[in-house]
Length: 409
Image (spheres, rainbow, N blue to C red):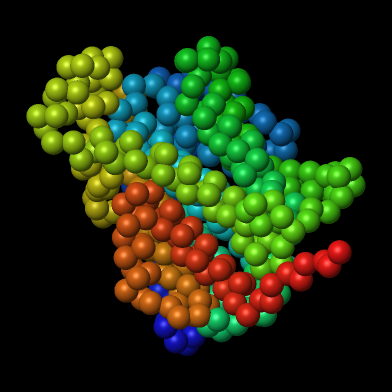
């Protein structure tokens, strides 16, 4: 893939961002959900039907921030609270796994030596923007900026020396990414839909949703604080191979990065496989399984591929009447937003990773890369495929690296 291809990808990415905005944010103006959210946020209504009461309106004490938080919290309350259809909860499980993997990969990419001081390294800022304007709008713009400005996107095929200088990430940062994402992203995302199971008060429930909204900030702060603290207490980490022995910079980087990619792949796969497997069950087996597990019969019966993964056309989305909806009616409207949020953004994400793979590895094979994309999309979803392409791109750091000289006795 020739390097100039990126100049064709950039307008494509911008187009994906525009279409994503139309299919997500634009739909809120016409489907009734936006009117419901604004009504509760402004105080015209006390809370969403079926949601814990009273709705919490103050989180930080800053009017501008609280105003935006109210809308975001209400959106996820519409998605999670009340008589939510089973397929909505199943997509939430699948979608959050993909978001975790995607965010982990973007976070890792922002920390590379070649990106330091550049706009693509301002990960907390980007993350908060995407939380407010959606992943499908912000991610393609970030990817376009990366292609145009990052030295990572200018690496040549098989140039190991340049790859080692550009792709390297501080060892403490890589060691801390999984734990910071787990605490800042995954933990609140798990607690958000469990208000009834954990007997949370209304305030606690809404607090968890609000806390999750700022996970990019929590990740950035935790990485910086823990990195500095551990550097002071423990010192610098040494480059080690998979056997724990001292090794070269390239090998040490690949070994450390493998844990980050492994984390992203694990989360994506473990949330993808059960939901996908359930969605493609043939009707006779679905009926039999429902008879064996009657408590989960509605999930089994409603958890079809069409119900979980196939959105309505953005020109005719599901809608509600703001003054005449029932508990759970808002969830299908909210899930339509998240479906386009993920699906549209996955297109530029995969193309970006494929471009980096094709222009960086020594002997790229487009056929092999596409086979890997197909396999890993089936096994772990589109963000798992992105992780594998980036992991193989990173192996370029091993090219031309001299072996570590062992000390003579």
